[in-house]
Length: 464
Image 1: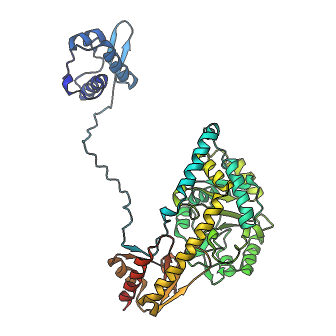
Image 2: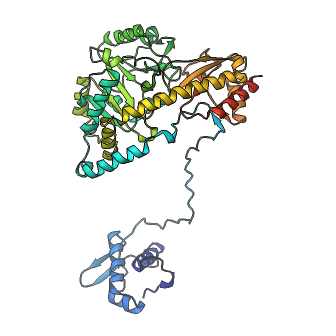
Image 3: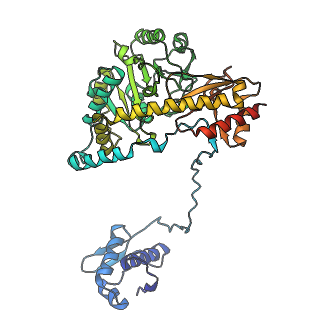
């Protein structure tokens, strides 16, 4: 007869009985084909209900530890090769999760957004309205390209802000540009040669590498990626940021844009991926026209994100495909579900449509303009100003400083890190050996100006 100490039971009693019998089977105390007590007998001998025993037996049957023969009873199943797995109360699986980035007292290259600047109250109001008015739509599956309301709102925004005439059905929405890069590789093919800017954003290369693409690199001059450098790579796809390049901040000249478009038109199958990074924050003058709006031959794929204009954690990006590519997308990749939740898509659509997004951009542009001036002033008031040249551009949320020094970049960065200051060097973003040294990236989007001023003085001391 099976007897157990029910005083040890924690939680539902049937679970404790199920676990005890399972342990006995795995330990060999109950052997294959051995008959178990009937429900009534088990329950009577232990002073518990037959329902409790029935639940325990049912769970054991569903997992294959026992079986029942009608009118005869319950028996231990055949469990060849089944061994008891010893589990310690504290598991150690030796999983190497990357550590959180080291925290610095002052981070001069921090590109995070100031959480106090996000319009939480307005976003919450719009979200409540969406939940109330669109409860049915929120529960429906989103099309592969995203809900039409958001695509239409983005198309209208691109028309008014970027001068782009885009049909909403050309737009594909995804959770971050990294995801959209993956869709493009599947759409265009990983057998093609992809070219990126040198220096450039390393994550782009890392994403392409995961799709077994070995990127080519084209050097840049003061007008952007060079036509000669791109042509020399033999690439089919050029991935560029013509409006505000990271990390140099260069805006591609009009003449260079037409050269790059001419390169794409030279051969069938060539495309340009235009990453419109930071374009919302051009501080002076009108926004520069996009390559997409200049393209007459369906060679440009336009990409943008709400990571900088709202917050990186919202994870909503989009791309605009030429007509023949959007048709191919829906023909070949429409089995993918949109990776952005309906709640966020409908909320962002209403946020744009009701004018809140434009007001937010205007407010942020004014704030960042002031931040930029304060950062320039902090540099000019610091000791670093004696050996520093500011390399500025009229757009984006960062700029470069060039330092007159003979010290290697790595030595400078190491010394600053030891004093609790982080800054990125431009030389870190080159994919090939480069002679560009002593240029450093200063980001002011979330900067504490007072701390930054103190850090610039320390920067100077490190150089001395």
